[in-house]
Image (cartoon, rainbow, N blue to C red; front, side):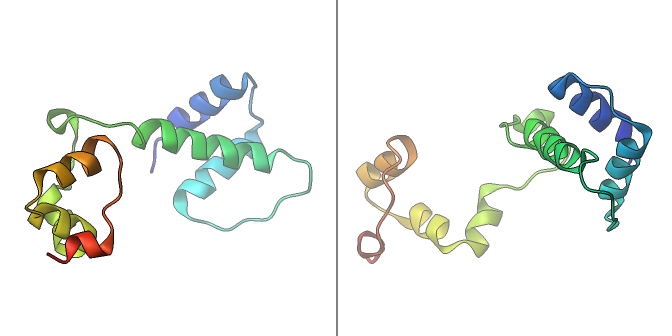
Length: 113
């Protein structure tokens, strides 16, 4: 990720703070995957938590297919994830409804049909 300014703006707004230059370096280094050391009580935990909040804010909400730049489709998930594959194969529409809308997890014995 090269858009450090977006992350910096988010963290400053989220915590209502002005980051120090050394904290901005931390954000850049985290983005580039570097390991780094820093003194205790320099705000590294806040920077890390803010970075996580930024990622959650950007990626955890559902994005409509038309608005996304890249896509993972359900059939792709089913190729590797057995619970989704079994869900697709389930004949019982009531079972599908309970799983999808009522969040009732499908038990292994229900899938062996």
